Amino acid sequence: MACRKDRFCAAADGDFFSCAKIYKTIDERAEQDIKLQAENNQLKKELAEKDEDDDDFTASVPIIVCLAVVALCACGGSAYLISREKNGKPVFNKLLDQPSGGSNGAVIGNQS
Image 1 (cartoon, one colour):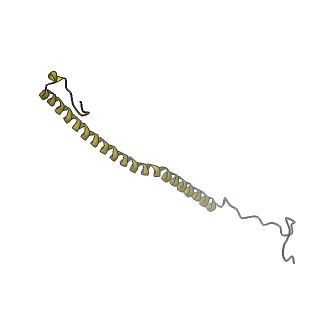
Image 2 (cartoon, one colour):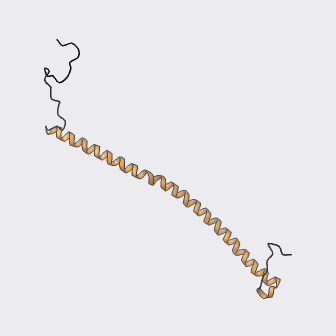
Image 3 (cartoon, helix red, strand yellow):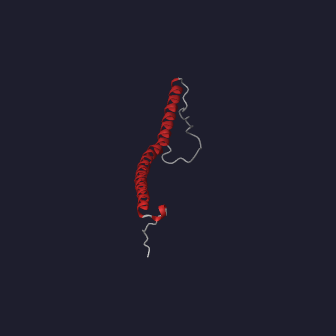
């Protein structure tokens, strides 16, 4: 009865010693494959960690750019308003006084 892990070789008509050499080579290659696979998994893990760190910085770049644009617009707008004030042509004028005797609405309180 054959077992699951039994090995059968067709090299040199199934001679035990010739098959043992072949299996030794196959086992060595399998060990190398296992080591390479472990190294590959480790490198993938390190790369994933590095990508996570890069993603944190990459996500903050658009926010920083937006804040810089808003700050630049605020400074430019302030400079524009100040220059208009200095030239005597303010952007925002004083409100005009309305006549006090007009009938623009109901008067509440003391009317003396």
